[in-house]
Figure 1 (cartoon, rainbow, N blue to C red):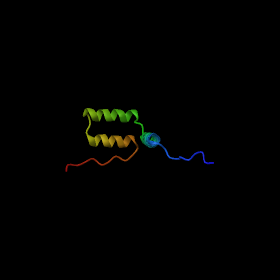
Figure 2 (figure 1 turned 90 degrees about the horizontal axis):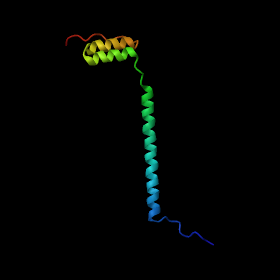
Figure 3 (figure 1 turned 90 degrees about the vertical axis):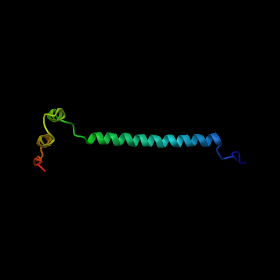
Figure 4 (figure 1 turned 30 degrees about the vertical axis):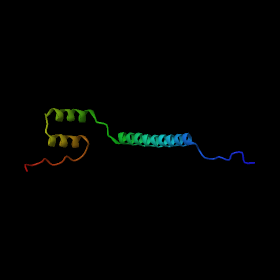
Length: 87
């Protein structure tokens, strides 16, 4: 009447199930990281050519940080910060 009397897994069956569970959680983690990176990349505003030239001038030391921040604010359509005074 009962053909399947043993419903337990063997040692290899339990090991296989553990590896499958680990692989599944690793896949979930990888998908979450990839999604986070994709969304983070999508939030970045691409630099305009003018911003790139300005950042290169700042990197070469042609302009100081205050001037860089003021000009960058103007390029992005914001009110530039007041110049830093001696202090």
